[in-house]
Each structure stands twice: as C-alpha cells, then as structure tokens.
Length: 553
Image 1 (cartoon, helix red, strand yellow):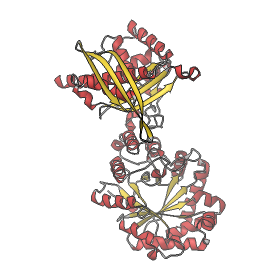
Image 2: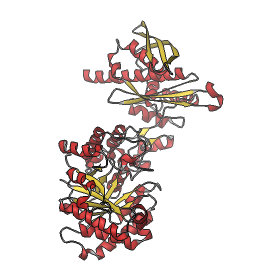
Image 3: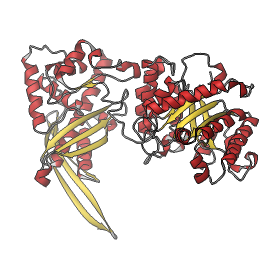
Image 4: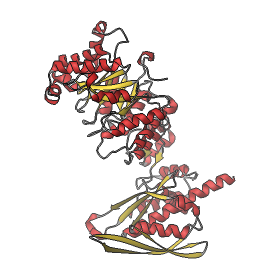
C-alpha cells in the first residue's frame, strides 16, 4: 500500500523517509550516476522504506532523467518524492520555471523546504518576513492545485525557533493553512542537542493541539516529522528525542551519508525505533535485510563500509577479549544488546593476541571444526597465534589466513601447489614528456609434483606477481579466473627503522559472491604481498573444493 497519511491508524507507526539520493549525495567525495540512483532506490524499496526522496528535478539533468527512468521502472511499494524550495521572491509560483520540472517528475508527493529562521530570510533571501510567508503559501497552494501532496521541510527550524519563536511558528501556520500535510522540523546546522529537540518538538505539538480548529478541514491535522544532521554527533539521538515527543516521520540516510558530518543514520534509527522502542517502521523480515542493504549501498557509492558502525558494521557483534568470548558462548546477552540476526548481521569471534582458548574454540566452530579444550593442539595453536602476532601478523581482519593456520595445525590444510620462488623486475622509462613504469614478475611453483615457471607483466610489482601466479595455476585450477583482488592495504609496523621496517600487507579477494582477507608480514614489502596473495588464492581454492564436495554429497 502506498504511504497515505489518512490511512495511518497504527498509533505507533513511524514513517521512514530516506534522503540518501539527495541529501546523502551531498557528502564530499560521493557521486552517483543515474544507474547508481536507480539501484539504490530499488534496494530501499525492497527494504520497505515508505518515502524515498529522489532528488530535485530541474536542479540538474541527472535528477530529471532519474524521475523519468523511475516511471519506466516503478518501485513496488515506496512513494518516490520530488524535492524543491519555495518559489523565488520576485515571481509567482505559477510563473516560476523552477516548479515546472517538479510537476513533470510525476510524483504524488513533493517535499518543499522553506525558511523558518528570520536571519536566513533577511540575509539569505534578501527579502522581508512577510514576503517569505507569501512564498510558502503561494508555492504550497500551487502544488496542491496540481494534486500534489506536500511535505513541508521547515529549514533551520530549531535555530529559527530559538531566536524568534513567534515568526517560526507563523511559517508553520502558513504552511498548514496552504495545505501541507507534514511539518518536518529540520536541525539543518546540526547544532541542537537532544534535550532542545525534545522541548521544542513538544512545544510544536502543544501549539498544533491548541490551534487545530483554525486548520483547513479538507484533510486531517498535520503531522510532525524530524530531520537532523550530525554536526554535533547527536543526529540519531536528536531524532529519537523528537519521536519520543510525538514526531511520526523520521528523515535520514543510509549509513548517515550527507553534507559536512552527515545526516541521521537510518541504519541506527530503524532498529532503535523498532527493536528497542516498539515502533512500527518496516516488516521484521525486511529488518533482517538492513545490514545487507547498508553494505550494498556502500558498494554502489564506492565508499568503504564502516566496520564499527552500530548494528550493521562488521565489528558490531565482534568479540575479542577471552572473558567476553567465554561469556557470549554461554549466553549472548552478556555482551550483545540485540540478536545480530534480527538486523541481518552475525556474531564474530576475533582472533588476536588477547585471545584465550574460548576464542580459538569458538572460531574453530565457525569454520565447522569441533575442538576439545583438552586437546594439546588448542594450546599449541594459541601459542602459535601469539608468536605470529608478536612478529606483526594480525588476524582480526584476516580470518582466511587464520583458518589456513588452524587447518595446518590440525593437518587439514589442502596442498594445492608449492611455492618455490619469485623474481620481480621494475623498469621506469621515458614516455614522451612523461615517465611510465612497468613490472615483470617470474614465479616458480609446483603443481602435482610438476614445476611450472611463468612470467607476467603488471602496472606494479604486486600486480605482476598476482598475474604470473594466476598464469602458472590457471591450467590446473581454472576456477582461479573467478578470483580477483578487491583491496590491498599496507602498514609499516615500526616507523623508527625507516625503509627497513617490517611491513604488514592485507589483501582482500573475492570470487564475485564471497570476500576473504589474508595477511603477510615481512621486512620486504614484495615478500609480504606475495604471502598474502598466495594465501588468498589458496583460500579461494579451498572454498571452491568445499562447494564441489557438497554437490557430490
């Protein structure tokens, strides 16, 4: 069912309004193509978000085309919303060309923002306070005359209310009288704190209750929403405070993307509202897709996921300390505030130099290995782990390498090939007025007791090594063609020793379906890289072998 204010009968319903495609896209370093916006919109639709703000038609050609494409590829349940400002001070709404693309976008709902703060009216718009009220009224009435339903975003509401409450309320009164169905209170500068948001939202509700008899009878009393920014680090807390005081719409973005410090993060707001406070936001089965949606959208916008993000981050339910792991094994509630599966995340046992036997046993179980605490192999593995971490290895982010280490200790590590050595030659040559570089790598491996020598070029030594190794193995293991490197990280472990310092390399690989990370450490960056690349290929082959075995069974 399309979101309809009149149809909202659930007393605890909260309407989630996503503005990732407009406000979120204003984040520095984030750029979206039309295809990107379409993929995100359909993902949000599947997640059950009722309102999706698509952008400002007419502000740029991309947004115009996006709304056209959505008419060809409609969403299944969400309302897509066009966004715009009040008309210009010098024109009537009917004559303002800015509003024509808004109508052409063909959306049932339009979000209109107007000035609430007298400072912005006088210094920003360079007009009078009365003229600003006329602009709000005229624009909303124009949109209503074309059968558009209006969400009114009261820009800089909380700042405006603090400095001139009478005028700020007058802007809301004007919006309601003109036909706005939602009044969204915006902390545009992100400077308000939760107690201020709560107090002012409560006062707006009191004002609405006291003046209900003066509002138009054509539709029900306007409802209140909240839009917060994170400049004070309190966007999520501010939005929750507003809901606790009666706000029924929450605007935000996936992963908190947005201008400056970002917007309220819907990946935190939705589970807090629904799982903690009992509000109805999306269906429970859709909630289990929240982590997946967060990561999917981070991939589309080409920004690394925040591993430490609340609820949806890779580390949100990761346990490292031995005491924590032991307790969680007995009862997850000891160190987990919700069940990770509720939002599509999972519990992770982190292996590090702080690990105890509980970590090792729990990690083994996650790999399908049952170990006996009394087995000497457990102690040996734990000691080996601590020794390697002392040398600079890190297995917290390289679980694939740790599984290989564990299976080696248990004599379960498959031997797909044997590494026998490599050479790398790098050359820098003039290319007209510029310089170009080329790397050539030669590797020697043994597969099924047969030595193979191969060489390959790359745009860097690691690229050349990876290409040569794949070339040597491809005939025996054609599935390697599916593997590719997705990330490569280098860290110097002891900067005091300069260029002779030990280097740790993390390599993330993927087969298009799964991702895994391996680690290498050496005083030679190429050696460290080679270790990580070799283990990445080895782990991918091990996973493929498991799949084949499962099909045979």
